[in-house]
Image (cartoon, rainbow, N blue to C red):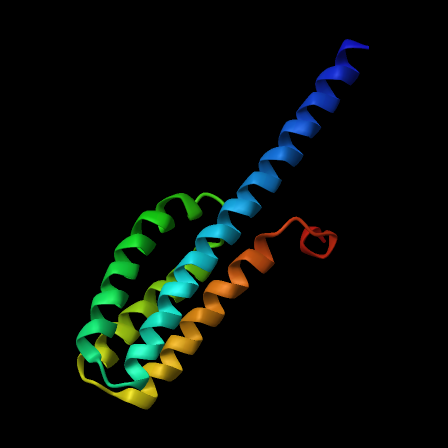
Length: 126
């Protein structure tokens, strides 16, 4: 009886922590995406300084977020996001409008994909 209670309690803790992690990853990803979309608006209107400032602030936020995401997210995905941030930063610096917007869309897509792949779904387990 005691072993059954411990197993059930462990399962509840495991399931609850998976839901909490999924929620936090989804919440932080959507916050980062919103800021990046705002930077996209500034890129479209050729306000490069504002776009650069938002991207740099967002990158600093990403650095903090990446610290704990590294515990639960595939490192290759994190590296791809990091590379995309660096490309975007350089493209905005050189004021390459079309390439900046394309890289921004790539970065947003990478960030949207993370919560989907890390969510607690049967298809992600198998």
